[in-house]
Length: 498
Ligand SMILES: *[C@@H]1O[C@H](CO)[C@@H](O)[C@H](O)[C@H]1NC(C)=O
Ligand SMILES: *[C@@H]1O[C@H](CO)[C@@H](O)[C@H](O)[C@H]1NC(C)=O
Ligand SMILES: *[C@@H]1O[C@H](CO)[C@@H](O)[C@H](O)[C@H]1NC(C)=O
Ligand SMILES: *[C@@H]1O[C@H](CO)[C@@H](O)[C@H](O)[C@H]1NC(C)=O
Ligand SMILES: *[C@@H]1O[C@H](CO)[C@@H](O)[C@H](O)[C@H]1NC(C)=O
Image (cartoon, protein in one colour):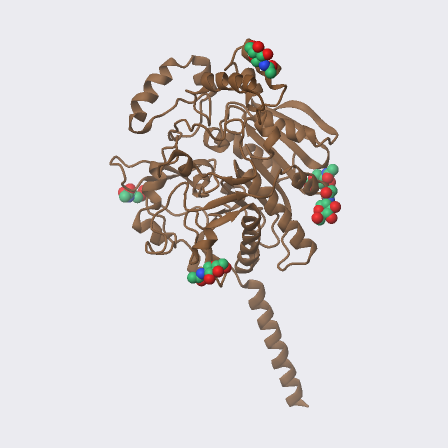
């Protein structure tokens, strides 16, 4: 009898002990980032970084950098952040937009930058997961190079596989609300992935993600609507004359995205000529040309009217990244079905046109940094590039509108935000497609405020679909307007009106 009781106790003890182990099993300590080269001080929250293998056969590995919340990590939402391209690393967002640090370039080009804490980091209010995707981008790689031929569908299913495995590694974050957020070509990544996640939840895929909603910033969405957005944008912004706008409308009959007549094409050429010298990512910012960036920036700032200088002002303590003008794509026809050229493929060089990515390059290609943030050896991924031409990317998911309809009608919240001075994916397109869904307006067009000032405009639709502009911001909103970005971000995550 005694013996039996003891065995039962012993058995129960084991069950209990395994249960406790299971519950407390948490973030892999080998992934903990213990020091961040360039940053002097203690980190305000835990950082983790490493790889998740999404395909064992091929050895396809996706790299992530996870910044736990500086607020309440156990309760704050988990947010997956994706940059676009296709081919661009999500360290773009980490270094230049809403990461935990502001990067100050070293005096000598290429030396380790100095890192300061970013007062507007999105990690103030959320746990942010930066992912290099698809394989071939940033520090993500595959041992089988056929994986570098990829597209929308494969990227979404890989990222879904990544998420399931990642949450298994970090089970303590499973109960937190989960959101998917991205910008630019992530206008395709976000809804296609959200749809995979939704289908996974429906099918009972384990673990069950607490998916709540998504945000898209200046996102590629629909070939026709985005393609027609540039001419009205150029007119509304005062970049082309009333005459040219009227003539283009007459000749093209509202079809700017796919010109079918020579007369229309010749009007569109005149539009292109008029806007040719502008910075495509923010028409208020000067246009930079390689090594002459400094000189050029000084002289062109002087030429800008003072009202424009004011509009482009940013509270970012360190200079906003310098950008030059990227020609030819994606003016007017952001994304068509089929192969989408990457930026390096378009510019025929290893650099992304328009982009000075010096601090990111100096930091992420530093051997000490790579070791500290757990990247693979240089023999596997030789160097970090902001945007890579290693992949061949097929846009095979068509228009995103059907995904947005499906997701919002299932109760997932969506915020479609747009820096209103971006000419790459202009707000006129995002405004038009959100309206085209036809949901009832529940919060009529109104200004929204940040720090006591009008920060942009918003229109709220039924089913928690919200369109929002950020006044004076370019393509990468938090880069230009970090305080305003943190404000709308935190209100959206909390389910509050913006
Ligand atoms: C790091 O910070 C400490 C304390 O603020 C300071 O004494 C030290 O000089 C700093 N080191 C560097 C390399 O900046
Ligand atoms: C790479 O993957 C392709 C497609 O699955 C396969 O046919 C090929 O054998 C693989 N190559 C290697 C070296 O494993
Ligand atoms: C194209 O423009 C020319 C010159 O304005 C005009 O004569 C011609 O009829 C136009 N063609 C079409 C198809 O509208
Ligand atoms: C959403 O997708 C699911 C699965 O494909 C489909 O059954 C459903 O009808 C779609 N709903 C809408 C509103 O399109
Ligand atoms: C919008 O989202 C809020 C917060 O998640 C939810 O309470 C509300 O029911 C949603 N409204 C609609 C119309 O789906």
